[in-house]
Length: 490
Image (cartoon, rainbow, N blue to C red; front, side, top):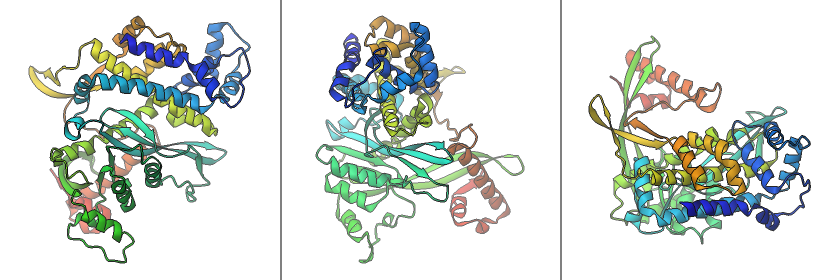
């Protein structure tokens, strides 16, 4: 692992040279080096820091009182975004080389931590990638105006690393008020289509895994046109779920639908599922409800015999890894708190977040190898009985540790083996959870997105339970009526 540490050191030691190659404006203030300014922005990407605290800490440790936070900000502002993109690209190359040379160990590790893991190399051959596409936003309010920045990302759900972003800019859209949405923040499908068109020569052996928000006939046509594969969840109201459906010739999607039906490799698969929810009713009694429903996936992987319906379902479920990635960005970095209107700084911070996530991935592999954990059991003893468990690494703990204990050494290019060994001994933690445990997706932060949705869902299920008990299902609105017919109280 010493070789990997040396490679990481070489990337960051080269910061002054990368700056010289990418700069468009000369930087002044000789009291601060380029590496110190890069270190400043890396520290600022930590969710728990402020610009003032960083400059105060710098002055305390260096016994310098004349460098204030504006000095850091003004000099770093003149560092070009390409410096951060280059660092990210170089760290990404290190990770990919590590993965390529240690494929079997990575295969074992991914199988341990991802219960929907699929060895796509064994099914599709070398060089295939399964990429989930999704977008997320962060918001800030300035002088009564809500600004929102959109980030659309392709994420390798098998190897759990970011692949690329597919919106071309980080321009801040804004709302004058909630009734005047001019941000076009739901244009993710169009961003993806544009990305595919502009990168068609680079995209080979790609399986796009997308949720139903990306259901668009034009997207199916583009993917087929460039020989790309897909697994996409269909909207419940989609007419092509009916295999006998023939669109009228004046339908705007007629050509796309006919092309889909004419492709022998395209198939639509229905998956049935059953799950139990516990809901507190209006009488404050806990009610258990069983929900039986189904969902449909469309894919053009029908020519791969090894790609069974079960494999396709596992690949789709692995799409959840991009949601976990977004959660990590928002929980461990200042992703949700980009307060500046300067969109260049937003983009820099975004790439810094990706770099930090990549370094954490390298540390996870290093830890697994050092402690020889690739063959660990996915079981534990509880009450003298062996039970199945799910394993996952405590990413947040590693991120906190990297910011607090390793960041300065990383930026200065002087990581060393003993330091990394001491670090992972203290910060590398594997959580062991019983299988089939599930929790409502919620937030404890008042008025945040999932805080509101949590109470909205509670109210929704209370209405349905009351309607079932009083035999008044037909009085519910359309959407609640559909859900009520799939539910039984147990």
